[in-house]
Length: 275
Length: 292
Image (cartoon, rainbow over all chains, first blue to last red; front, side, top):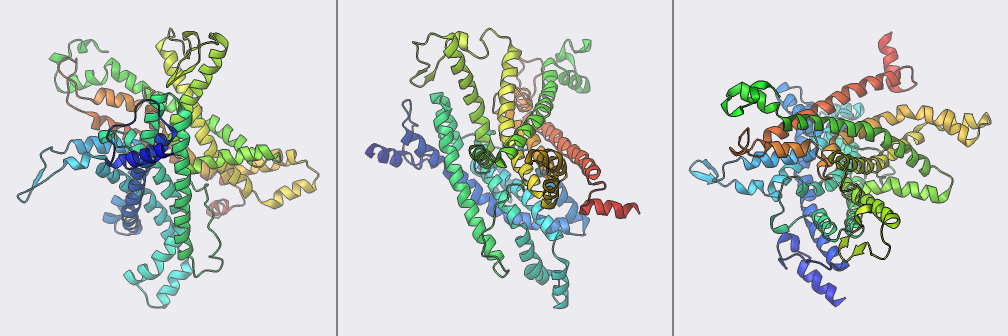
């Protein structure tokens, strides 16, 4: 038990570069595997949290652009959504990495200053960028569908109250669209969280072996030739965190629907709404 | 391939490009697109079958079978699919080799020696003497099983939802006519569920298409493998030296996938229109109105 505490101390933040530098070699204990895989999970949480946060705002802008009558706004939004929803995330990672590597090493001169570019090829920035754009495209399609399915009566009521333009959008359209879109958006958030495991398998190098949960799991599986320990551990972690994610989104959903009768009932996670 | 390509160093411009794109390695690259499509065409029906079994298991009256169905359909919700893609092939491979070792090997030698999983050469799968295509084929077989398990679970979710969506009155009427549960399933439930299942299955096909590049992680020589292989910068030691062109190869793959998803969408739109024809649903009603 004490030994395990030492292991946790050494390896719990290994994925961030804090603690022991060397990965354990040979004779992996269960404690080491659980600690290191849990440590890698920090990367998955980082990617998922920031991609969802930034992607949410971008998705709202894209959805609005896609409903716009102006083709200069609508067409680019449509193309963006088509490209990112129509191609595999795995390929998007590869393309982004290859494209970011092509940026000039010495930086881009801009108004006398040099913008450094090498940080863009690192996973924390480059992969996050891809995840943001990807989730923005999928979420934008969900929000777009919700905007199109707004009940006619609510818009007429808004007109009757003399609301128009931005006020109408902010007070009536947006809250209702969020309410409609939330179950599907929950699903998208789960998919995105699961997709973060792809990052270190797709071109982006794990610097100094600081990778995500699946990176360490496959490291252990490769070293021990035993897939029956490491993969169930990472699967268990993901089940727990997925349940947590569903709970968090359920809280938001209850708040969005708090004025409606029956809103206190729990939201059911509908797996049929595949993305 | 062409006679004029015998000495590529003397070629320039378009002729060089033509020879470059028709070199032997590139033909393998083009063939690997076939591998992807083949995998899709093999996996889709098997996954549908798994899904059908899973959906029936969830609705089964036998409790252990129902539990199995519930676990099978809910595991993919919490666990990323890529974990299954990594786990299933290696687990299956070790399972097969372990079984073969029981038959072909000396039982006194332990299979798990420390951190090694060793079976005698006679139990290796495929045998080390087997030709290269057997190794590739075995890899693809394991990949197909992994894909079928994951997408079977997704399909089971979709089909179970579709079975629940068939109006209850239809089934009650069948029961009133004295049909057994089995007959109700076969004659009423299953024929009617397809129109409800189609949107979900369409979605699933799209996800399956977009999951195929993961073959690369499983070690199959697929399009991603060849794109990295061919695109990497080549020195003058090669017949066709060029700088790092991986970006262009990946862009070509991107276009391939965009065409695949775009084409699939067109086809599914047609199937949807056909299935909605004459149905008592909103889409069927709309078609009736448009016709008059």
